[in-house]
Amino acid sequence: MVAHAAMLGTPQGAPNVSVLLPDVMQCLESPDVEQKKAVYLFLSALAATNADATTIAFNRMVRDTSNPNPLIRALALRTLTGVKVESMAEGMAEPIRAGLHDNDPFVRKTAALSVAKVFDLSPEVVESGGLLPQVTKLLEDSNPHVVANAATALNEIRQRAPFTVFEMTMATATKVLAALNECTEWNQVALLDTLTLFCPRTEREAVTVLERVAPRLNHSNASVLMSAIKVMLHHLSFLPQTGDLSRNFTLKMAQPLCTLMSLPTDIQYTCLRTLKIVIQKYPSVLATAEVKTFFCKYNDPSFVKMEKVDLMIALATAENVHQILSELREYCHDVDGSFARQAMRAVGKCAVAFEASVDQCIKIILGVIENKLPFVLQEAIVVVQTIFRRYPNQYEGILTEICSSLDEVDEPGAKAALVWIIGEYSDRIEAAEEILEIFFETYTEEESPVQLALLTALSKLYLNIQSDRSVDMLQELLQVTNETVNDPDVRERALFYWRLLAGDLEVAREGVLAPKPP
Image (cartoon, rainbow, N blue to C red):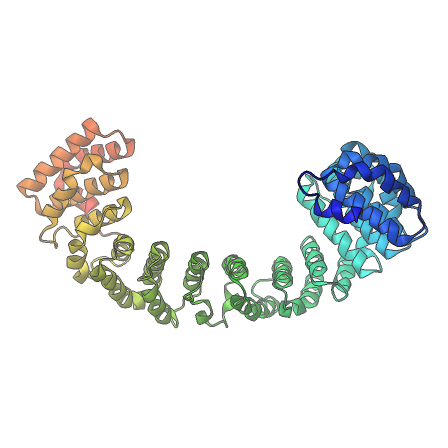
């Protein structure tokens, strides 16, 4: 009862069970195993909340690490190393060292984890006591559970140590691979994480690891699957990327990764983030996967939808881009503004990458403009600018619709894009002068990107039509910039145009109105 009270915590106002420690300590003298287990349960719980109180039991726990019963030895060692008092760390080294060489595997695997606990308490004790090499030797232990605990301990130490904890050899890797089939799921994760530290010296060694790890791709536990993929990606880097072996192992990862899309959203998110990294180095990993697998569902959270859209674009090909755009069209009208904008950006990427899809992209953009969706409309203007840059002097039929959306544009990025479009096609837009005059009136209040775009647009307008109003606006704009604008980039741009336009206008036209590379 006392042990359970210590574990669960006492109610407010109840006496502190730590005062019972001297009486409880007497029970350690009992030969009854169950009674000793209860005492160590009490000590473990007490150590978590009042470590100093358990120091009086330290010597008794050290003595029990030599008990004939392996269960008592393991319990004593686990409780001993759970006491977070740095001054006692040095006294833990010898019991741990004995535990690492114990004949019983239960004691050895407990000792392996104890090394990680002591390293967290005092790294110097572990280093000076030579405990790390001894834990590393346990990776070649005959008992798979000992191997797994040694791997877990080394992984934890590796994350905190400022030095290389150990270097794995092929012999050690073989032992770790053999232990995979004998361990629980979470121990398999620890073993697989350890295998990422192995750097094969030959292609044959890399293939051996890949062949032994590949069956884990069909595991039902997502953590095991993701750890297996991490190991495979690490060892694939030791094979020629263009070879058949690399391609075969890469394709084996496709279906398991797609299967994760049916799991809870947090696992989906992790998988999607992993896939984005994987396909950067191995684009063929999802060559056989259906892009529909990554289409968004109505109940997907926003963070998953964002990742799915990015992945859809990464998987886009000339064959499936129209299917992807049909799906993106629906996303552009989503009530989630951030997601809708992401979808519109994806439409722009498709247009730039696949010329055959531009007509479909333009239809999607026109649909957004017609519906006057403010949060997507801003992004649509930026996408149109990108399309005009990529395909100059094409798709000018949408200029009228773009100009009609002037009142809805209020974000700096969208304003700058709209001003650029007006300036670029100022000789083909009848109301170009009137539209730019609207931005001219609020010039000093605009953000720097809009000011820079307006300087260029008015310079193009002047070179294209040279009306009295365009001349007056440009002169006044350059003067206002020189006198009131503080941004050095804007002032430098204004000075550049001032000097350029003061000279030969034909030379200025050749520079400012020159065809842009796609």
